[in-house]
Image 1 (cartoon, rainbow, N blue to C red):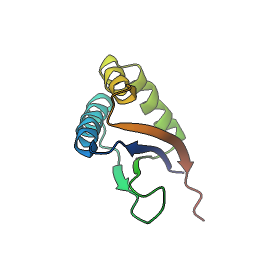
Image 2: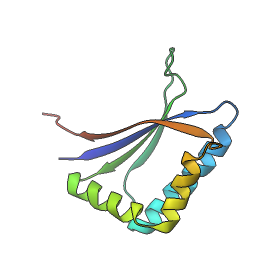
Image 3: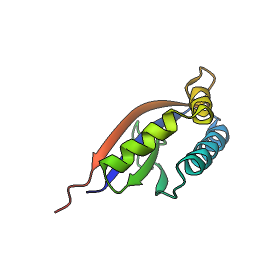
Image 4: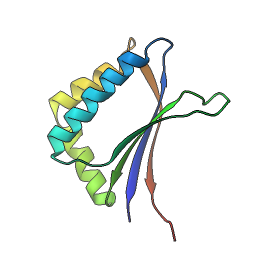
Length: 107
């Protein structure tokens, strides 16, 4: 059963370029550390309403064990910790507003 992790961010006005730079560094570091080319997709919500413009980052894994192993590896790495600390700082270009783990149950 495949698993996806989804993080949702609200980018601060005028900071999309900064956010995309941070995100590219995050993705490059993640791929370097876990040695995989897991499916990483980035979406911008595009329909009217208060969620318009939110950014969703989706990472796909074969199963929950693979997702857990990748997460354990990343959070133990100082390089990744530094990137995430910059992303959580008061002057970060975006605010994370949600994180989900989704299990595919398509019949």
